[in-house]
View 1 (cartoon, helix red, strand yellow):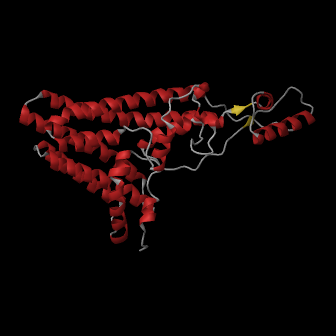
View 2 (cartoon, one colour):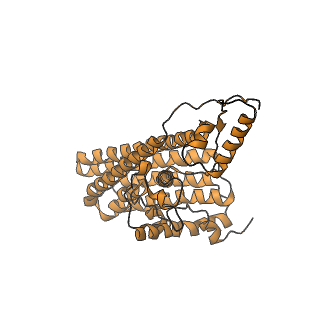
View 3 (cartoon, one colour):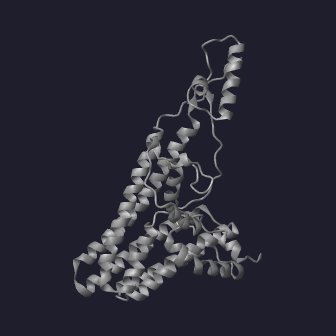
Length: 338
């Protein structure tokens, strides 16, 4: 068995992640991942199942009114859930079924913990607001994870229309500013068509941009993906094109202060400071550790912030989708002898 180093484990971390994961989970999870990788043969799916078991134990603690124990178990469950992906990337043992299991396990853990927290507090206080709180947490989480793959699908459809639509040569040569490679291809076809004496007949050319290598991304990566799409695929660090900071149709997007965004990027933190991970941490870890009085206020505040973040993401997706309308793809044109 190969002996892995901590640098090997660090290389498996996401390029950008939530601030809760970066600062409060990964420092411990990476070291535990190193121990698991070097001294056990446990699989990523085994870690996912163990994470789900810990989540169920957390829900039982919440239902029995032991808030602190439930919060600690939820934190450990999430940390183990982070470890399974690191082990999969480190050893190359990830599977398609593992992706599904991880996704479904997260939803089961959140719904059960929300139900346990609500039922436990209602049994003690008789306050219906806790039932509404549990239902709201579960519905908001499920909406977010139903919405995320649909947003990803919209992005993929728009990108496909950008890459695979057939563009007439005349429009490539005379309209806009094509890239050198496209102009050369268009010029070559035009010359051959003219040489054959077929004036006025221009064969469409399929302009295809090379695809980027495919990578497996979780639903939390959609925020980062929208950033890249709206920036035209360009980064915003040093050497980035200033034009990439313009939104669709020249509209400038609101930006965080540059120093702050660079600080976040240096620490692998996403610019979206509230996501599902922070929402779960606020409801199932921070609030229970503070006490019963903090459950409703913190959950409501985190839920409102998460909902606002979802609205912003949907709006930005709408802006991105307006750039290239969804139209039926043109079938490949028949070859014309020249």
